Image: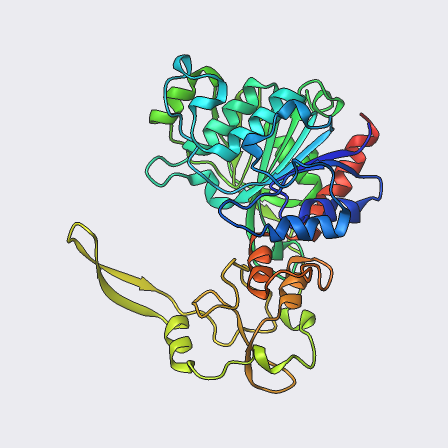
Length: 399
C-alpha cells in the first residue's frame, strides 16, 4: 500500500515530520492548517516554508473545504483540539453532521466518510476520555460510535512521552483506527481485546506495556448518538480496543524507558533577553503552594488550593508539559537556573523545539517569538510519532 498522508489541523507539521523521520517513503498529498481569528496564519506559513503548499484550500477553514476535493490517501492524521461533541438535535432531524456541535471532530468524521481512508491516527489531550466533566466519557463515546458506524476498529492509548524516553512529561491520548476491510484488521480477527492491548495491537507494538488491570466492557452504536449525547457516561481507562461497536478498556503500565533530562537539551551562550530581571517575588508566588478563598458568581465561597512547582526546574528531570503560554509570566512557564551563569532564565524557542523533538529553529520562519512558543505548546512530541511510524511502516508493507 502506498504511504500517502492527509494531515488535518497540521500545526507546524509534527505528524508529517515524525512520519518522515521513520521512513522517507511517506508522502503527504494534502494538509489543512487554519487558526481561527488570526490575520497572520503563522503556523500555516511555517509548514509551507518547510514543504511548500499544495493548493489554495490548505490555509482555510476546514469546514469550508469540500471533502470530495481532498486527494485520496491511505492515512489520515490530525491533532485536533478537545471540544464539545454533543449532538445539537436528534439524529432524525439533523442533516448528516450539520446538526451537531463539536465542529472539528465532525470535519474528521466527514473526511473519513467521504474518502474511506483505510487508517486513521489522531492525537488529543488525555482529558478527552473524561470530557465533559458533567458527563464523563460522553465525547469519546460519540467518537467511538462514529468510528463504529463507518466500519473501523479502534485502539487508543494515553502516552506519557517521558515514560518512553522523551524530554517532556506530556500526556496525550492517541487513537488508531483501521477499517475492517484492511489486512491489519483481518490479521487481528482471532485475538481478544486483551491480546490486542497487551501484545498484538498497534500501541502495544509502539509502546510496550508490562502489565494491565482487569478490563471493563461496554458497547456503542451510531444510532444511539442522541442517547449518548444526553445520558451516556463511561469511565474510559488509559488503553482500549473497540471492534464492531463492542469495546474493552483497561489501565496499562508502560515498560518504562529512561527519560531524557532537561539539562541535555539546553543551549549555551543564551542571550540576555531570556534572563529574568525583576518580578522575582511574583514568580515565587506563582510557583509556590497556596490556599486562598475564592467566590463563585453565585456567591458561593470555596477554598482554592494548589501545590508548589519546582522553582527553578530540576534539570535532571524531563521538562513539564510545554503549554501555549510558555515564556509568559505565569505558573506553568519553565524557569531554569542556567548552568553556565547560575542565573534564572526562561527557555529559548529552540529549547522548546528540542523538548518537542523538532529540529532547531523549526519555527524560525518570520513569526513573532511569542507565537513560536505558542506553536510548540500546541505541537506533538515528534519522537512519539516516529515510534508509531515504524509500526505503520510494517503494517503498510502487508496491505
